[in-house]
Image 1 (cartoon, helix red, strand yellow):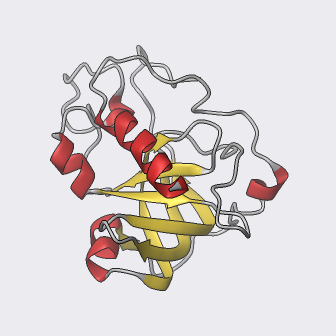
Image 2 (image 1 turned 90 degrees about the horizontal axis):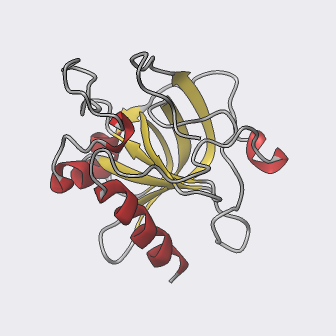
Length: 178
């Protein structure tokens, strides 16, 4: 039920359209000490794309690369979008989208097919409360964890570590949400 609640909240944010209000506190300034331990100093080898991870199915150990498309405020939960799917304005600079991190220039079905939920859970299986530290929307990251698939076909990567690979520069007229 907890996972269903988080997935429902996450899907509402992912499906939101361009120019909508950006939730407050999606880019916390500092992470919790527990979550800070998950930041890896070097990029893990052997990463696959979000699409390949989904095709491969559940696995005890998986390394997946993509972009952060959404962060669930107050929890160590985010959506990882396949890097092959350009965020709004990445390819078409005249796009003019003021919220490129929501991938609103793509259909809901495309966003869903190219995404993977990433969670950090405690020993009881509950999502960990806290911030992701210096990770923010559109960061390219590589995540290590266990890939699960529930009875509804939802893929969830239970993160045990991550590395921020790159951070894109936004046009001068756009500001990161805070």
